[in-house]
Image: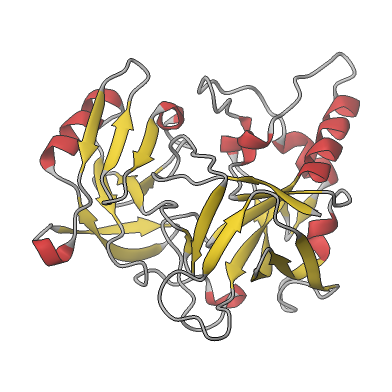
Length: 292
């Protein structure tokens, strides 16, 4: 099996970057979802509420500056706010976990208001501020502002199987869903369909990862990532009928990176498209007290 794709989402729910290589930190790929939008209550904003987020392109410079570009071409450069330089802190929330993030400059909020809505743009200055769900992790595991886990893995074989199942559900014809609908970080080719459901620990290139939980899917998967258009009930309807895990329509598996022996600092290593993927452990189920 091989790593066939890498995707980084600098701002939660905005458009992807697809580099040939990406460095890995304990809380995810470098630059992945360290920024997000928050509403007046501090709750995160995603394509679930506002599909237009996916149409905004986001790029990161080496010095941490975020560049946002709207569909019409309007753009803004936003320096990464940091507590050490006096940036205000905002209390924000992702799926019930509250933590503090640094708020971007006022000009960013005005730009966001013009193109998306009355939201604040915040940056996770301290990537150790948000713990991973302890039911599926070890003490000290943290995550960026992704939904719940540092990385999401999907396989090309499972996507092909899902598209075949959708075709059976819609003999009159249906669009072929691309991998981008599922917003993974790492894409693996050469596996059997749904094989990842049995993986518990894998190696990608020189790094190892715990495979900790299937990813329950939401309305974002019904949203065309190129146009922002909601496209109907698929793939949620077919996943609910044919691939429910932990009582949810599921596609993909969540990963937590492991620190290589002798490695210090935040960067654990680098993933590259074309890296070999090896299953190191399989067979065990997710937490024994959680029914499938």
